[in-house]
Image 1 (cartoon, rainbow, N blue to C red):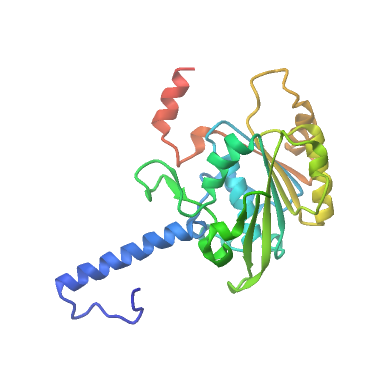
Image 2: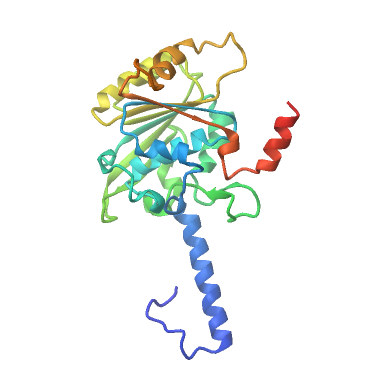
Amino acid sequence: MIDPNISVEGMTDEELLLFCKDYMDLQERDRKEFALHYYTPANDTIAKLHTLTVGTIGIFGGNGSGKTEHALVEGIIRCTGVIPKSLEATYPRQKLRGPIHMRVVCESLTTVLEPIILPKLQYWQWSGLNPQGGEQGHWGWIPKHCLINGDWKKSYNTRLRMLNLIYRDENGNPAGVSNIQFMSYDQDPSDFASGDVHYCLHDEPPTHAIWKENRARVMRGGKGSTILVSMTWPDNPASPVDWLFDEIYDKGMPGKCKDPNIEVINIYSTMNKHLDQEEIAERAGQM
């Protein structure tokens, strides 16, 4: 631990080098255990997500565009009360409602939740390009100090797929416990028909039946609650997503029929500064 009252004046070269090493190690540890503090949106378009206060949000983008990543961060901000430094001036404080119930629904618990979503939340897991700790990537978004006793195992119930997080007030003091429930689209719609939900994230398009059940849970969450879908439009024209276009996309786009409580964000993989854009361009040229 570095003494905050220490003075570098009078240090020998060896002592100064050791001091600098300790400082860099401490900063790297902070970036790892408190990645949310250092979060910056990948571009100005997706940054809009964090300023919205509407009840329904649709984020539409290609693979690797960061659509689900940013939607997860928005939920974690609401669950923990921790606002990233980059959003301190713009994040609407009315969205911080104290401990909340969040629900994340994905395509599969085994092929999506475990290998893809959970590592994006675990502070010791690196997501992005090498080297670890570099500029193009991040450590898991949930701050270590928001886990129960700083321990993932004490916070996450694998049987119930429920993650408990300490919510902190504006002074950083514990003010209750939020929870995140993880579910999948292969569950029966009736499994979703319980509880109050304040922030509901659908990773890729749900069935209309599941959407309606979750919408009812969010309505029970009260004013300020949000239901969101982040998805890539399917290539298969037979995919049953017409209702998404009618109920969200069409109503959320600018125009005379715009619903004031629905917002749509369109983003592209080429807008994600955390990806290798040369690789993306090469892959696009092969399509």
